[in-house]
Image (cartoon, rainbow, N blue to C red; front, side, top):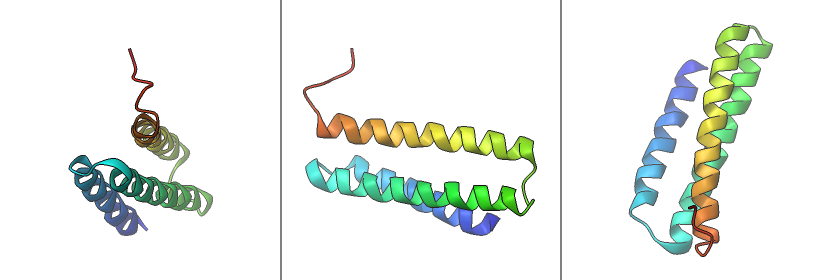
Length: 88
């Protein structure tokens, strides 16, 4: 399960790097792909905790970090969908 999560994380990094060089809807589409893969990792982490592969402490740290990554991806998507609403 750890190897699968690592593989998906690498895919997310590759997608994010690719998105950096895209524009418009193509960029948004790639970022949605990254978001979907992140959701898959969250499910796998919850499963790992449920079957006691992960200890509670590790699970809490991972969930927090995955949540933060999700916020970053979501913010990037929102900024592209609403370009007139730039943060100050």
